[in-house]
Length: 226
Image (cartoon, rainbow, N blue to C red; front, top):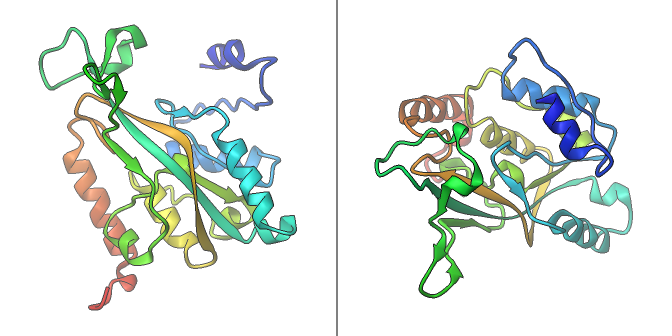
């Protein structure tokens, strides 16, 4: 992985590669990345998703326009728009797919309407923050978030004890200490390979366990009115 990262990024972007040998899981890996970071803002991107060109730059321009000082900006969490696109293996007629061995040329993009020659995303995540709605499901993907580093550290980062939905848990805890503001700009593409969504194909049981873990941890937020 290190060689691939260096070949792709060296001379093009400032980056720091951290080689974690002990298999700590993605939450702890993300926390370590934050510890090594030097900027004031945090954005996260899963390895199978894509940043939208110039999306974050547009967001930061709007953030600066809205706030008179950096101190004002660092008091809020921002989130942009994300579109989810579906892909399927061209050679596979079944519902299963091991996409880790495939390359882009072997995938059919379900999201393209060949007749109309237009894009039809599987889903678009583009809603302002609502605390009650967030208790039902996480509708703000991790790659939509723009988080002041000081707020992330204040709540202790990702909960590494969670096997999934750690981003949902993060948003709920961040909502205790700061306001969220929606920016109507696309920041990333959430890619879905075949029928896998959220936790991957065949992950329904894992997803159910993860959802129960969120409910147990945040049960104090669920009252009759909510």
